[in-house]
Length: 359
Image 1: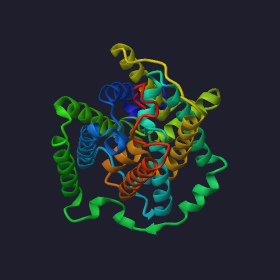
Image 2: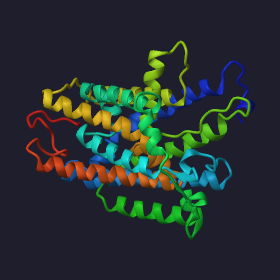
Image 3: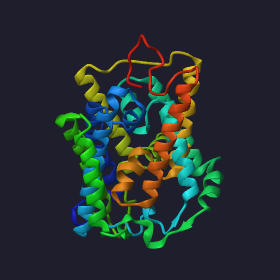
């Protein structure tokens, strides 16, 4: 479709950068305003868990319904997408998911939330993101790539069952069950209609991204990757672009990350929430850096983070994405339980009681 839009001096990749930037601005502003984060809904402050989980589930339901509506209308399809690969790399997904979940508890935020916090002046979050990007890039193309490849060779042939649409009821039935269940929990979570509306707006960005990269910006002579919201891979891509900008042009992922940070920074400045924050000491620094490294490695092996595999992946009805999100949740809950039982304190409570903070 891209060739019909009349662009003469812009390539699909260049256009995808600006498209990602726009989506990122919206996500950054919305996520900052709602404190959107799955970790908060799992192991955050007990008073905030149910509302935070309700907001996240609302985004999931809207992302799923919107994406499947686009599939039903024939606008996009995922038959050849990596989320629907006929051979499921279950070991890499499970190991990566658990690693990512534990890492986001150690770092007190997933990749998406830390991106929001970094744009709000949180130097802890910014440092963790740099470590995450380095670890992710090393897992994709560097020293840790052999580990990823070795685990990825352990697969389960599932063929057409790579999609939940193979279940009784088909895509429409499965979508209805998942979306209705998520919304039922969300409405009863106490999040409030304003919070739920924010979650719904975030969810709408997922099908918008799928349609944008999978239809509007597609050119048969210059194809681009079909992508939606994600943070692990895009952070690695952004780091590589920052280092080698004269050799590699920015794409959708880089635009998304820059847009999220710009949108979150604008929201923080407008609301007066922007403030510089840093580490309290060596123990906290080591914990955060370990969490960042675990998320970088785990996010790549699992095929995505809480947003990439969670919102975007599950919206395609991918069995692999469901497995990844399940492993992430399990890793987070186990890590939080272990931290709660240790003298160092809980992953759900702040490290410095006298200094309230968001991460």
